[in-house]
Length: 275
Image (cartoon, rainbow, N blue to C red):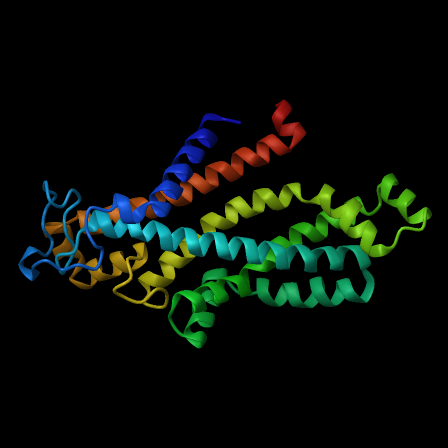
């Protein structure tokens, strides 16, 4: 794996440690408002990364925001991957009318709309909130995993060892779960690492639009929204850190998961690894 992959792993490990130990790492309560006159305060010994529009410590809110981002990313990725894996495997293994209905109609319906636009529609219908946001992202996120799994199953089901198991009288369920899925799971791992980046970015985007995690929760997207509501030019002049700090956290997290996904793709593909 290349150097960027190791950098991605380091960033993700630091992100996980920050999220797990947030109550001990954060210098202040992320919801505590000491004094409204300290709004948009510059970095200082008390507030290392300054304060936001109502005087809350930005560092503490960024640290607790890592919890929300990881919770959304992990939950959405795991649930979407499991649902997509099962549906894609069924479509690719049985083929025929089942594959036509699943991949020919259902997949195309979800893929006909941009992912973020569909997520906005789902969250607007369900309402804001962490659980509803995760549900909306899971509903639209499984299709990518299903397409990858379907393609793998279509290829692997024709291999000799699968035909031999069928000739020996193995049941369809045994062939699918014992012989096909273990050999088709590698691309799904790469897809999941890239899906984590997409889930983190989607949560931040929806929160910035006011459709994700409602205030005063310390979501990175919500932090950017609250700073931007004061006025973009005003914030850039008075306290650019209120925008740049959560924005940098989002960018580093997304880049880290993308670096890991690219590294895993290179490592799991023998042709790229040889090159």
